[in-house]
Image 1: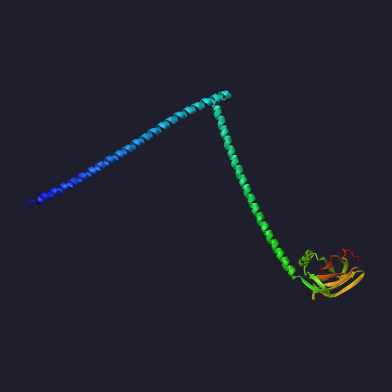
Image 2: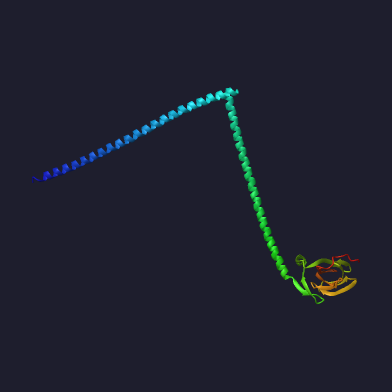
Length: 276
């Protein structure tokens, strides 16, 4: 019965001591924090004071500089006979001129850039055109090669193997560019004698239904009849003192007229007019 109050008293004393220790620690921490904060504030105040001192010093120096400039400006004005107001006016005029020059420079640069852009566009267009021309040339070359491959070599009406035969004007142009023989185109009308190369030709008949024709060749004071010949058929004859082989080809037969060409060797005489 007498032991229980002693235990409670001891427990109460331990708790009190713990709380007292915690309070002391808290108070000590607060003191340390307060001291640290006070130190920082003091340092900050010192920096502010130093900055203010520097600002005051700079302000004084600026005032002194302005005063010297004013004195120098007045002195300069007096030396050249100008007042301060006149100096300011001239300075403002100079600034306006500089601004105007800057604007003109900007405008000139913008115009130059625009011209450069236009030139670049033109160059691009020219490049595109050149590319198109190259493509057209390549296509034309291919077409010429295909056309040349289609040209035929046949035997003439005299049994002599002919060279390549052109069946239209485009093919004839290819043969001309080859340069193997001379070529002379003609259009003959029925009953009218025409000079072609070194001979004369006279159409006697044109049969459009069956694509046949008959004509006379006048060469070396002789008349050679080529009767009932066909379209694109090599019609051959010899002429000249060297007995050159000429070939005649009709590509088109119309009503009372035919169209075609005569081919002659490169060494054959030049064309002359034939008397009707």
